[in-house]
Length: 219
Ligand SMILES: *Cc1c(COP(=O)(O)O)cnc(C)c1O
Image (spheres, rainbow, N blue to C red):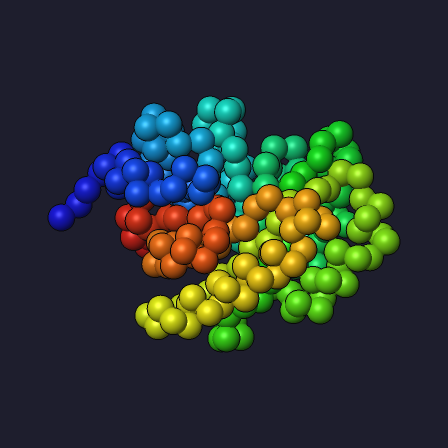
């Protein structure tokens, strides 16, 4: 059975606590699909390729909030610095420095999340807890005027083991709690189509859901 994007979106939205922000992950999907979700009131969209996000930004209504959820190459930051709202997967000082530089050119402040590595499998990007603390405490980072680190992001292992997923999200939540006050964090981005309920149980404030809204992707 194929439900429509509108039906999928509304069912999902009705099941979410009001304090959880839904990022509709529209990577690989045509602009028409995003527009269907937009018509239902969705304003926050997530993409993982900068050029694809940029062309959708050009084509679609300008009150959409664009989130870059994928791994970012430093040399491509300039293609999104003029419009991106939140970059989820910042994992190095070098990248943050480039975001700050490009944001300054456009006289903007770009909000960022730091990605912590929480999955047991080692294919995932993200920083160790040590590097995370080092970055947050570095004087150079504290001098950046055009970036604001507003929270943390993480991805759990791709597994059906709910206990493992839960344990990984708890690790992220614990770091978030530890740093929240001192760094005025307000966003904890965790949870995708397969694990967003577990993420919400563990304190997620922002979920990134694609296939459950737009259907399977053909890569
Ligand atoms: C693709 C992607 C998602 C959404 O995945 P679904 O399983 O389709 O919900 C979430 N986060 C990141 C970082 C992604 O790349």
